Amino acid sequence: MTKVAIVTGAGQGIGEGIAHRLAAAGFAIAVADINAETAAKVAGDLRGEGHEAEAFVLDVADRDAVFTLVQKAVDQFGELGAYINNAGVAFIDSFVDSDPADVERLLDVNLKGTYWGIQAAAEQFKKQGHGGRIVNAASLAGYEASALQSAYSASKFAIRGLTQSAAKELAADKITVNAYNPGIVRTKMRDAIDKKTATIKGKTIPEQQADCLTEIAIGREATPADVAEVVAWFVSDAAGYVTGQSLQVDGG
Image (tube, rainbow, N blue to C red; front, top):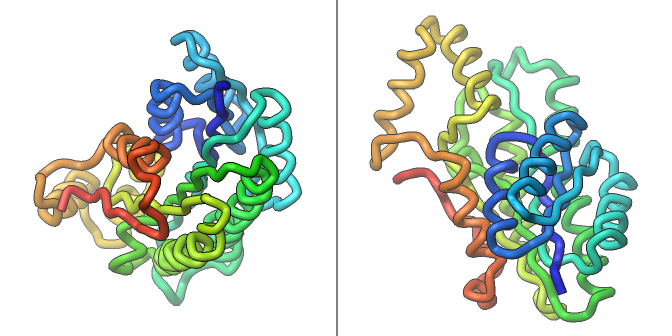
């Protein structure tokens, strides 16, 4: 039986890379995103490559929508195999100037959205009765907090805590819960981060990007495919004894 992997935020960037990698591993893919156009494009690309895929539109901050997503994906594909809490947002601003609306929206998406995803996936895995895989998006900023990203860093530190707590609670049901922690990955979200950071620091965007590269031992930014390989391992049989972990994918 083909199992479905639900990937939130799969309409672009890291989520799109994860969707393609898990499709190659044999999963049907529920391409879940708040952007209907990009979700449809990724799902169409996957089907064009011979994979099973369907686009689903939702805001992960809406708990009911997350539970509905799981039910719709299972109704269409038959069984849940993996749930990837990849959706997230970020903004750049000084701690004292951060807009309350921006802070609340970020925590609603990044933290609560992950919480609801764990809940919904765990409920379905328990119904199925033979375990499953949950993988959450944390961040290097959840290990070492970043200046100008106070709310984002807080959300990613919190996701590491959710991952550990859920892993301990769900292990008896053979459900593993892990997290991936990307460093700098060249995506549209990263482009926006670099642009705003450069403005605040009075630098050009190339100068800002060059400064960041000096902090990466391997000497290059990550690609979505680099992160997707870690996710594919977490959901594989090879990682069956690994749970509660947050693996850094930051090039050193």
